[in-house]
Amino acid sequence: MLELIAPFFRQLYERTGLNFIVFYEPYEFGRFLNGAATSVRLIFWSLLLSLGIGVLGAWTQGARSQALRVGVNAYIQAFRNTPPMIQLLFFYFGLGAFTPSVDMGGYSQPLISSFTWAIISLGIFGGAFNIEIFRAGLEAVPEATQEAAESLGFSRWQTFLYVTLPLAFRISLPALTNNLVSLAKTTSLAYVITVPEMTYVLNQVWSDNINVPEMMLLLFMFYVLVVTLLAAGLHALEHRLALPGYGQ
Amino acid sequence: MASGGALKRILAGGMVLIGTAVLATAQAQAPDRLKQILDRGVVRVGVQGAFKPWSFPAPDGSMQGIEVDLGKSVAEALGVKFEPVIITSANRMQFLQQSKIDLIIGGMYDTADRRKIVGIIEPAYWTSGPTLLAKKGVIKDWKDIANKPVCGKQGNYYNKQVETELHANLIAFAGNTEAKEALRAGKCIAWVYDDVSIMADLATPDWEGYEMPVPVLYHNPWGAAVPIEEVNKGWGAFMAGMAYRWHAEGKLIELEKKWGVQPSDWFVQHQKQMKWDTGYLNPK
Image 1 (cartoon, rainbow over the protein chains, first blue to last red):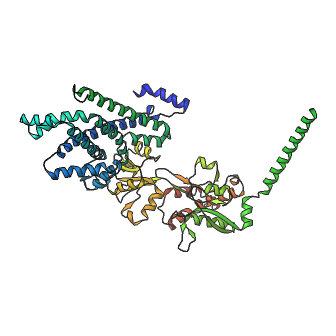
Image 2 (cartoon, helix red, strand yellow):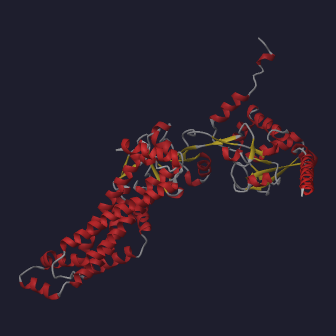
């Protein structure tokens, strides 16, 4: 891979001074690949966690127990009303101080790494929005449909899982796409707690090689590409799941 | 028309002559800086205002520290009065260019860019460089950080060297405060940063139980500076002689001890290098 593109980018540098060092120097190329892989993994897991939280939270909002409902609403208020970067710092430095760690002699290996903290923090942040998005979807499902399910002998959980949720999910998808795309971009903030994702890695590369404009451009293009793919995937899902005659 | 052209040529020639004469007198009028200082009876030395222990205010308001002592030794050798002028990193070279000061001894790294603007005196009088801050007894050698997490700051140019040559897992934070907090929380075995800054931290009670266990990774020498046009004249040559003697006579090592700076091999090496061997005077 590198052997193929290296000559082109090396020549580009020699001729024009545009230094895309990550595409011709093996060490920087390795850093770039690691950064890209970390970013993609971070996006995948935090989106997944936020979806899980969204579904569970939306269900809990309709729970009979008032304590549960109050709890979910408090969670939404807390995490929708604070900036994601503050949340990352709070989880990593604030809560990180109280989590167990293994003494390695001189330093301690925390059981929860900065990468895991980033997933937890971003998942919880995105989840708070997802709950509200799913709630909108759930409330849009006609009462009559739920009554029909009830009359067929479905339990409350079964009605939610087999009838309400599948319909609500379809209704929520456009808003959900928006929030997931936003969350994918927010993962770049994980650099503040030293998760070696794309922003962190390229920052180090441009500091070492004084090629800020080129690396900024690359960083920009990276997010354009990743977010385009994510949005395209979600749109395809929306089309695939579309019910004939339902909301179309 | 022809006569007009001739007139212009004569005029132009005359202007060049006058211009040259003015330049020549201007040069003659700016006397040698060394002579100016001796005539004035005062040497004005640019020093940092709050840079412990190199240059900082004493309780009585006067300046004290390593760089102030060096400035005083210059004044003493010239037999003139010492006048410290507080400079900042941003204005010190302009002060020198505008003749507001005669000399900078103000914690300035010797770099190629600066050599184009001011006359950096060789040899350099001090040095600093990246080193480690760690809990006492944890690290004995640079090798001890291999495959272990080391905190740093994003954007430092030695980060790559720490990763590629010392094989440490560098965890680079956006700011120094977070990096130091991570060191305290035990998220890393050490913090890699400039030794001058680490020494300043160690001087505070916050960092009791921590130490600077290894020598600097490489040296970034600090140069005194005179105006660039003076570097090869009397004033520059005099200062080079002073800087040489600071090393050879052990003045810098003495100041290191006096002001409680952690001793560095750099001074010992340079003293050896520069000390003139007078063994031939007493042949055995």
